[in-house]
Amino acid sequence: MSFDWTLFIHIGIISAALMLATFIRTRVRFFQRFLIPNALTAGFILLPLYNYVFPLVGLDSMTLEALTYHLLSVSFVAMSLRKAPRREKDGTIFATAVAVLSQYAIQTVIGLLLTFVLITTIMPDLFHSFGWLMPLGFVLGPGQAFSIGEGWRVAGIEGAGSIGLTFAAIGFIVASFGGVFLINYGLRKGWMSKEHADAIHKQGIKRGVFPRGSRLPVGSLLTTETEAIDSMTLNGGLVLIAYLVAYLVLEGLTFALGLIGPTGERLAANLWGISFIFASVVGLGIKGLLYLLKADHILDNQTLNRVSGFAVDYMVTSAIAAISIVVVTQYWFPILLLSLAATIFCFLQIPWFTSRIFNDHQFHRMLLIFGVSTGTLTTGLALLRVVDPDFETPVASDYAYASGITFVLAIPFILSINLPVRAYETGDMLYFWLAMGVALAYLLFVFIAYLGLAKKRAFARASQVWHRD
Image (tube, rainbow, N blue to C red):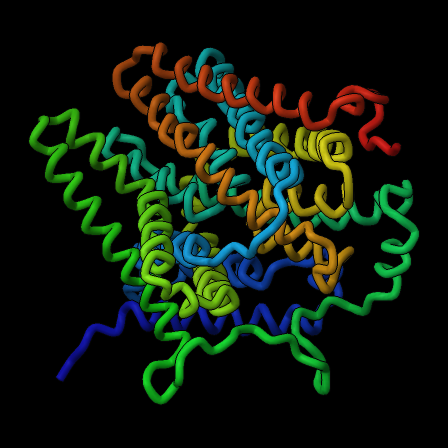
């Protein structure tokens, strides 16, 4: 009897690359010093193999693309199911959401403006939504950048998924090297308290694996009796149920919109590109239902973190490996130009903004915001661990609360992503400028919120990148 092994062959290859990357991290100081995520290393190990070697034996990157697409939604569902512990309301959580949204807005404005300049000068055939791929890759991450970029195929735009993945890969590099630079620079310039600076100097090498004999942290808790059902099975099953319901919702919307005609069909195709939003909303609905049934105790945040972490590690590796080198070569100049511009603004704006908008732990919050604005939450937490190894500060938990606010506030922003695509399809630049208008509206919202939160510090010592009271 013959079964299809394709999916498990690819998963096995990804797993081998992750194990090799883990070994490299434990042995090579370079990867330890710059906190290079193992998934990023694994992805670059597989990148040339999936472009030049594996296709010769019938293994292409299509399965990797599918894994990237689906694991993105799985990670979002797992995060949406997590229970938020009670906390006193203050402005810090909202300030964190505003700091993240500032990068959405700034990077989008930069990306669209530079795209417009390129179209009107040296690259008239560049698709109008190109500039959106930079903030998608930097701020949202590889899964979103690929998923949305691939959704543009219905408009005749080819290779956008690979371009989005490339921006995400560059963002990871900026997060790793740039984050370590900011830590060292902040130490020299006194951006953090002496207590935290001394703690950093006392830390050991970040090998990525706990040494033999270490006191190991608890990774998850049991909420079930394992003879009935394993706790991982229960929590993971709820994640997969939510994803199944999201699929059925999208199928229903596709059918309903198809009744409208070609316009409805195009809209339905675009909705599949942001399936992770529907998956997250369904996850929130299931969590709400469990609360109503007084059954929310079966959820374990740490177990859900493990599910999300598994999905993210495999998603990032798949995403990097699935990049088409041919497509990247074709668009190397605009990719480099937009990435350079975004990197410069991140280095200047994030320290300036965070040192004024937050009242406590400014340096810690700056590192986390920098990490998630160029890589993913995993990268941001890796940088935070350097200055707060045991998460003793409320920075990580504040971000967890703020991510819910950010997600809700960013939905209209994400829905506007397809406006420049319409400009490319129809030649009507009104759609392009509408997208720019949305980004500028978010920028205005961020500015007003910043004035209210920073108060007297808003423009204090404006010429200095870092503000110290």
